[in-house]
Amino acid sequence: MKKRKKKGKRKKADFWPFTLFSAMERQKSKLAKNNNMSDDVRTSGVGSIPLDLIPEILKDLPVKTLAWFLCVSKPWGCIIRNRDFVKFYLIKSSTHPQSLIFAFKSRRHSKHFFFSSSQHQDRDESSLSCVASYHMKCHSQPYTAITPSVHGLICYGPPSKLMVYNPSTRRSIALPIIDAHRLRMYHYLGYDPIGGDYKMLCMSRGMHARRGRGLAHKIQVLTLGNGSSWRMIEDCPPPHSPESPHICIDGVLFYGGYLDTSTRLLRKDHVVMSFDVRSEKFGIIKVPSERATRFTRMTRYNRKLALMFTGYGGFGCGYSGYIELWVLEDAARHEWSNKNFVLPRLASRDTLFQVFCAIDDSGEFVLAPETLRAPTFYVMYYDPNKNSMRRVDIEGIADKKLQFWDDDSDRRTISIFPGHVENLLFL
Image (cartoon, rainbow, N blue to C red; front, side):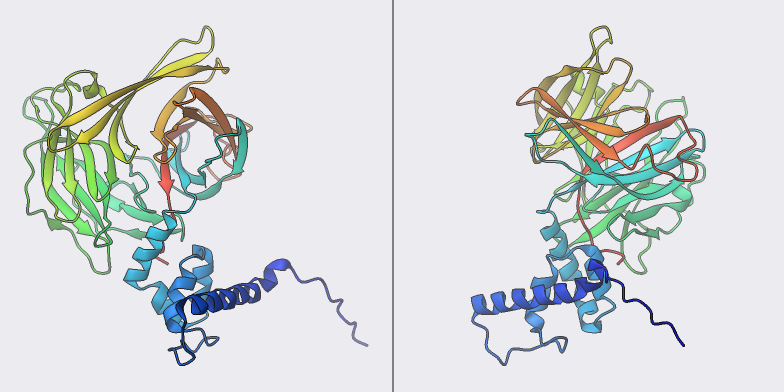
């Protein structure tokens, strides 16, 4: 006699497709009522949902759900992968809560690890917590380029194996190899919001004859897409020596450079190079000759480019420091405004912090310990308007069990990039 299997309770997740379809039906009825649609409207053949309404319904769904829909309907898959829908989805996701992207280095194993967590906007709470998501790891030697999150994508890897990664889909694509000839290579990822194109700008920096700073040469660009390849840039920029700090804002890629290549002095003739991603034209923005030439990071502040330099105080009465910002007001006129903030003293006396970036929407700055220590990694949000700090504990990083990660006691915070949004590319 066969034993009858006990009927267990079905998990709540088993019903989510049906619940989702019900929600879509309600959304369809709402949109149809608002648009006074007739009964003879074109339909997709899937659940009698009008074809014109499907993009309106899908645009508010998370990437994981859209990935499931690719298996449900071929017509829906065509809509989700459509170039215009991908662009529209990216614009829509930019209005949703955004994330922070973290890059850490395991010094013992010479590897980089990437995590993400929510970008907390609740400024009324002095202490909060969230859970991070682990994404991937890569080698950190011989040297590895890591670009900021550019509309949902990041670039990483050595010149011989450069990758573009989408944290939303957890998929990467390998870019065509460039023969580096053992020269220093610089890669900058940019996005054209009008055309919806991602472009990678690449250049080599040669060696100077008198041990100065080498000039940029072999400047190439690649448009991400099927069958794309590197091509030489048509608009040659003025002679300059490129540097690593870079950021893309509203279709313009900014990166550091030096015009005087006869010396290795870091503060001499420091400029900002601009590259219009759509027109592929270069420009030079002069930096004020004062302390602004010492900038070490670029960030976005009040929707504008900002050069950031930070200094730190002693440990006698707690940790202290300051932030010096130079905000670009008019690129054509080379006009900058200066803002300085003195950080409140922190209670921790044995922890070194770095100021990594600014949160554009809130005007806050993100600080984090240079070294990861158990049990919990955390970040500090500094609000210059209130001159206050708030701490957010991020679980699932310092205590994460991973190969080459949890057995290393010397793990360093490399970068923190704000404003990460969901993206459908590589789905």
